[in-house]
Image (cartoon, rainbow, N blue to C red; front, side, top):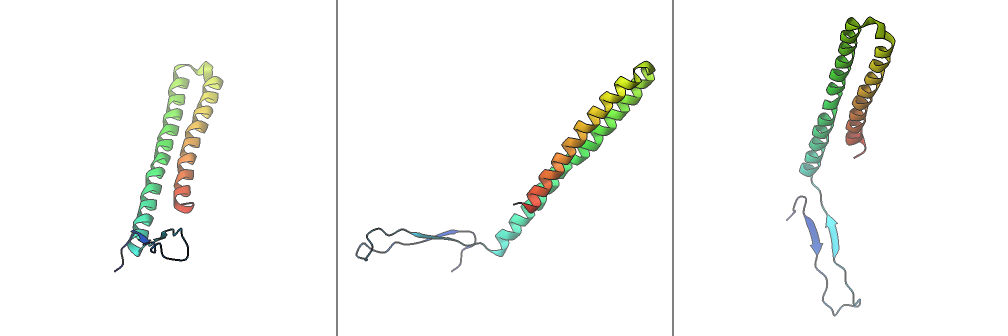
Amino acid sequence: MQTTGALLISPALPSCSSSPLQVARREFQTSVVSRDIDTAAKFIGAGAATVGVAGSGAGIGTVFGSLIIGYARNPSLKQQLFSYAILGFALSEAMGLFCLMVAFLILFAM
């Protein structure tokens, strides 16, 4: 009888054996089904981590939309607004890249 994904412990021998301290031997058996479940979980986790890239795109759109609105209200602040927009772009893009990095770590490092 084969059990899938169960921890099998072979019983220790009686105390009349040559070694006074018998340690139970443990084996872990995996099956095709449990490997398929692990693979599916990796793909689901990587997909969930990739959702953050869409948030990064929305954040970049918001940053540059706000730049256009701010420039339309006060054109004399063009240089200061543009530097703030570049900073917001960099931070938003970094979050998207971190999400993508986590997705690749889930897929290939685990």
